[in-house]
Length: 159
Image (cartoon, rainbow, N blue to C red; front, side, top):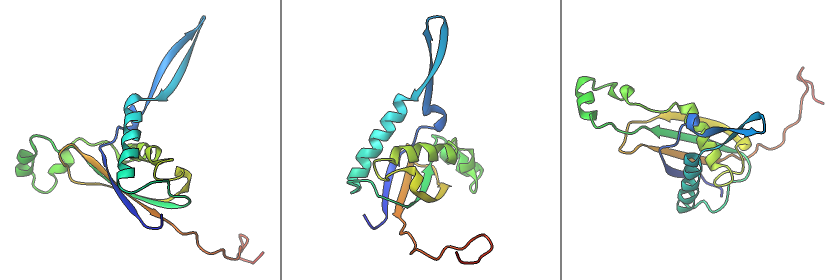
């Protein structure tokens, strides 16, 4: 894949609910076991299906740029909020933090639309306007590696 792909995803689970921990007793000792939640697994599965529907048949290999817009759920009283404060009413709408959405998004894209999140070289994120049900719109753009350049040391002299 050489061009950008845009995928509209459902509103993601927060990173705060991505992991779950269970205490397991082994004899007299207790151990904590941390695992990916059922909700997070379901989100990743949805991402896989939606990526295929968008034409992503295999992960983009190598460097990528990720851009996403997180649209929170539109509340039932949105019109009342708009009347009260037409310019910043959407600031009162509950929305997960962009960084919480980012971790979940990158984990869901890994192995589906991108090879691995270690290849992400640029991320841009923004909170969009509320929409019914909420959504996450992500654009993945392959980045060509720059031609090899002469390497210099820290003082700027060529090695």
